[in-house]
Figure 1: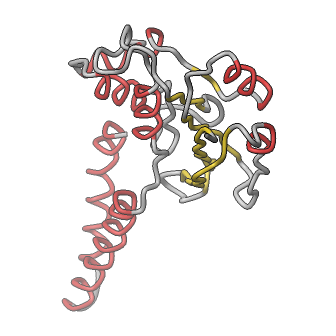
Figure 2: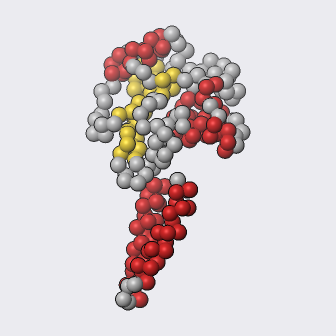
Figure 3: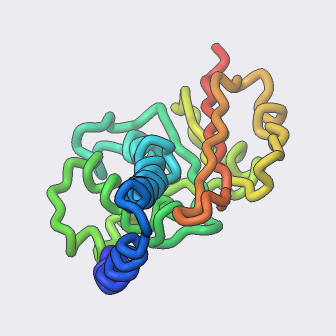
Length: 211
């Protein structure tokens, strides 16, 4: 994105300055300039405070916490936590489209794993290939995986929906009733960085073992 801004901004600035200079009164020039600055600063400032990006950092944190000591030295030898992650729709390098296997995901995975990284290694390095990844690919598969992993006491599931008004039924909670219970549920929308149109909504659900 910075390269596009660098090419187009000088021309836009010249045009805007010429139009402002044609205003018949000094006060009109000042008001027009302030309006132009306020609108643009509000648009881009809202992206910082409005959390338009998917929470790739939280997803990466969950994935790293689920790794055994053989992969991440600071972790337990046999973790009691697992993360099932969404890996699909709308992912890409553009703002508002970051997911686990994009540049932001690679950065946070390396950061939380304690691996020093340079920009080049983040851009082209496929660090996630060294990790244990448990994709969210259906209730039955997760249930079977948990049956094969009796050490798991807590897990999270990252899923997604493009129907932003839909609150998906928690079929997993029904499937695991009596074994695990859901303790939290979050709906986190991601937005297009120009139009503020919702691109998709991530759903994070956390479950703990029923003892």
